[in-house]
Length: 115
Length: 116
Image 1: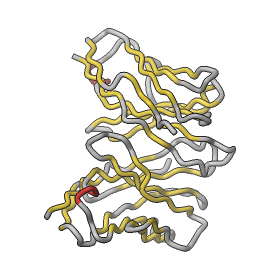
Image 2: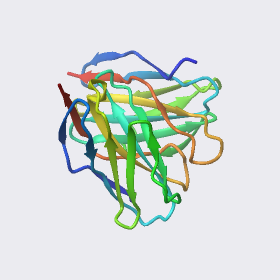
Image 3: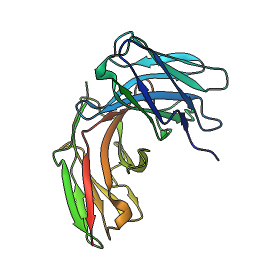
């Protein structure tokens, strides 16, 4: 069974640009969540999607957005990039059987560098 | 809001020895889940072990075990017979049983070095 796949692995963008990151969950998993990992702030929850609907959102500005498609694949978008957006972005999926006991499976992340 | 604290930025252990990583958390909830994740240089977060707060028995997974002290809000990870492949960042994480299942609150991590 394939794991969580994130593309691309690395991205270099310039301030002011926008970027889209992609995440394909494990087959059968309906929940996809995104995390930002930086040396200063650690791992922070961005948002979660379930059945194409955003179910929860962390404390990030509106420049950070996402969506989920009918096949559960998810994308996150960051507009008007700032230097502080440089981070490792991790995607996680879970089967989500209606309780909070479904473990999260993480991808290898996308390393975004903003110059 | 819940918080998770890992007070050991770095730890070192010799191969075949035992090491304990500390984690404390703060919550007003009575039911929740606690996790230890491992992040090797490949960057993928790998679930090491999890503990349901309503279970008094400490979770174990092969060489990994936890010491869960609910009253003290402490959740330490013990790695026995350490191996070179155990070298990684280790994150303690909290998940509420209320609301969405996917929001984890992470600690700042402990970098574990394994020496020969």
